Length: 266
Length: 319
Ligand SMILES: Nc1ncnc2c1ncn2[C@@H]1O[C@H](COP(=O)(O)OP(=O)(O)OP(=O)(O)O)[C@@H](O)[C@H]1O
Ligand SMILES: [Mg+2]
Image 1 (cartoon, rainbow over the protein chains, first blue to last red):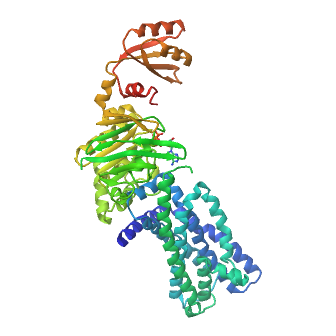
Image 2: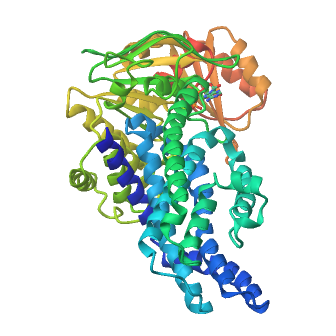
Image 3: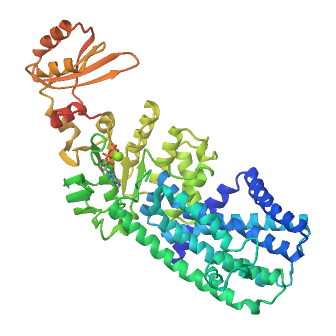
């Protein structure tokens, strides 16, 4: 069973990575556009003579932002589109494990986005002369992976449960887009929020990941000081992943009863 | 296992709508079983239940001996579906990569999948466009690709839901030939085909179920179904523009058992197909048309087809 899941995931990820990277112009656009948005913020900080740490804070947040959009548009609304083309019923009737399909979507998306995020980060480091601590690069990378694990597991929950919104899924995505980025403190440290909000925010994987990476790479702290972030991310990831596998099962059962599994233009 | 499908009082509601109404059919091993019925008669609903994508509201269905409600995982390993109005796959990757992707879902190993895909591409003469992106192929090529995807896992039961819908005559014929040769090659293979093209049913199916408003009206071999109307006389009349109330008047003529018409808007020519118990009334029909100043362009006696059977059994036209 585990083997089946990984095999399905590999195939689904392959398709996603091949599909997205088959066009070089897309790649350039994917890095170029976020870079423009981020540059606006960085230029504003620069012209205000903000301390250089501010630029580093924004650069890390800006590079991570793309993952959230990928979770929304590449995961949450994915099954809606797959149902339109007829892929979803074929996945289900193939007998292949659906958690494998979800995992593949996540892996493919994460790989695609990582290449782009690294591109954006390197470009800003070069263009704005941002200084980052690299002594803790390995723990930072590990933290990054944990962030993706939790974030994309959340995306898997969205993918299965958002099927019931039908075509309104794009509105839901818009609703979740900016506000979530705001609370994740993409361009500022979440410490500016009141403590109560900080507590809630610490359940958002993206916010945690960004915060942790800043601690390591901007302030040069040691991973031991932010051990709690590692633990929370790991727990969130496990819980989200578990819920996602239950959710996809539930979605299938419900769809078979109501007839929505194959319904188009819902 | 000679009974590949068996349904017992199979019923499916959508709200108040009854999409399938106490359907009892059996499909035997190695036959092409056709479901012939107009739009909305429940053909796809039956396929969805048998392919474990939809649950019945009441009644039971068994596929290859497995219950669709409980043993669906066993069924899934042994079936596949090709629906003419679906566009499965991913447009931004190549045709052959799409096929490989599906081969992985169907349980082939990574390299084994490529091997199977490459040999099918050759067998089906798809070399020309196997390297093209899926969103760059014509609808004929797409349907061929989709058929190959459907047989990739060598299913015991293949569902073909209007596999040639919207395709031109040439490609439809090509697909029909694939279907015929595919099932001939292995006695373990069985096909359930839905269509509302009577030629397709006539050419492919060993047995046909006529379905109307969720009910199975009749199941028999094509030959036996045609016998139902063999005693009847069928005429086709081509006229210029004809009004509905005139058609109603023709239906009232003694001896006319059924009539349906198709008018071609672009040419303004109407084609009437009339089923009669005897040849006599044709004279009355012609004089009625003359009275109404409707010009008869052609008149011919026709061999009965499934459309006439449908008309005879249900009293309305198939399309
Ligand atoms: N998921 C669904 N939810 C609600 N109603 C449905 C659903 N699927 C089918 N129906 C209804 O059930 C009836 C039978 O539909 P079905 O798709 O089985 O017909 P069909 O014979 O395949 O028609 P066609 O030739 O147009 O494909 C139709 O009235 C349709 O509107
Ligand atoms: Mg249908």
